[in-house]
Length: 447
Ligand SMILES: *Cc1c(COP(=O)(O)O)cnc(C)c1O
Image (cartoon, rainbow, N blue to C red; front, side, top):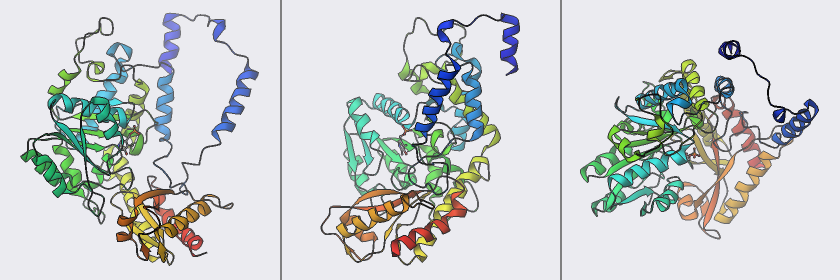
């Protein structure tokens, strides 16, 4: 932190106000209690944790974030953090390029996928103020909620047998002429499934309908789609088609190795920037350049988030076979290894082959939907509470009628919903551990 020391030299040292000081013993005490409480988390970093979309950021991101913390730049206005604002523009351009969006793409970082999607839907509403939104049943619940916030009707289209938006049903809805924007998902939060983006965009275009792609979870898999060795059941063409979308959301705090507080929204037409127009009497005074605060709904935003992402991408670039691309490809392989082990297992069965890096599977039983619920929950809890080497998975609810089409031996009676097990394999280490973890799950399922 040479420049901070230089500042001391040129600006002179000064006495910190005593109101800011604390006795070392009190700080020690607080940190003892704090660290103790943090121990109440699950070990998200470990390969045996395959529960939710959780993992620690890359150490480079942590260090970069901490370094910026000593200054605490605010990317709201250029004055608040000129260097991290410049870095934000660079990483946003990198993300747009990865997704195949044009050079003039407008975008910025956000607090996360929720706010990023809200902004995209808000801009969508301004483009077609009298028309509604459409998303699939498997889209993130935030879309329906944000449509309410925006006062726009959201129609939900059913999914096909593979939990992707049903194209026939979508066509029926957009034909009515009152749909302004369709939301497609690249990597659903539930099962990591990808909507048929290529076909759906063509359909929307022919009806003058706008397309927003929620790639909050799956966006970084676009790198895997650019490789020659695309893994089985991976919809490379649909990832390539994201390049045609009007807006895209991607979360660097999911597969981009960042701490929470790092989402991103991208708009193919930079002209939508005018939607954000506002008059602020006080924020902008030192330059005529575009201020990120002028194209963002959020005002104060952490420059540290932009700095952390910038440093991470310098070291782990957005390259198909290197850096982030190599990592996400390994996660795809981990899911296929896990699925193959489930297919071989005596007491487990696959719910659906994985599209990205989330695998759904269930105990093999002969019985009702209610029996399967008991078996799934039993295995989930047995694995999580093992004293020697616990394994964390999660439970995923599906309508019993649908589940029994995917699972042998289960009849859709005595329960409307069934739980299957779900494993999110978003750490590259999962690839080498997948087979042995499934072996242990199978042993418990047999017992
Ligand atoms: C995680 C996620 C969101 C919500 O994003 P946050 O970053 O949690 O606010 C929205 N859509 C999808 C598909 C997601 O996976």
